[in-house]
Picture 1: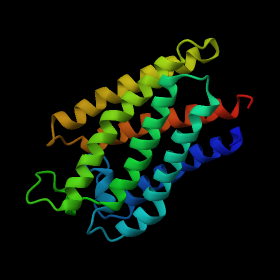
Picture 2: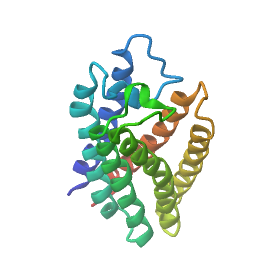
Picture 3: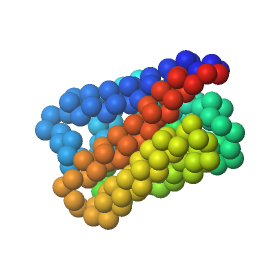
Picture 4: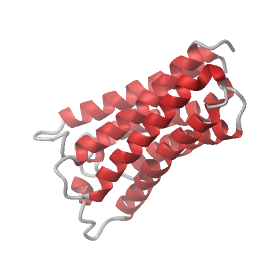
Length: 207
């Protein structure tokens, strides 16, 4: 695939995910973006949950998967870079699809009281995303380190990866925090900033 198409896939995935996440919160009365998870906007009993999953989160996951599985070809050959981009495709792409196919229970059942199978799968996939997506970004940063034209991108990857690990720690260390929604949105912002950065690098690099 040419550079412009890969760029468009990445940017469209980001726009779709970000729009769905924001609109989902606006559709729920008294929803608090600071304290509530994004997943609560498309929980199993959410009024617009099915619509958000089908037209927002699942398509964005497909686009993220395509970007990850195809994007590495537009960077200097490196096993680490390839592994990192495959990690993005698998965990952020397929993972996003899976958490939408298996939505959480009402209120995302933070106490895990008699959770449904869907809730268990949802939580497991979320854990995999937030564990391996930061690692994938860092791996790409290490893989790009030896390429002189990609030093700045390498540093950016390392910074975003470390920052996302920090906020993932804050997210999981206190399940009763009033800032869970804020921490999650910062994590997601760091992820999509990385995808946007890579997309523009691909666009501005000759095939």
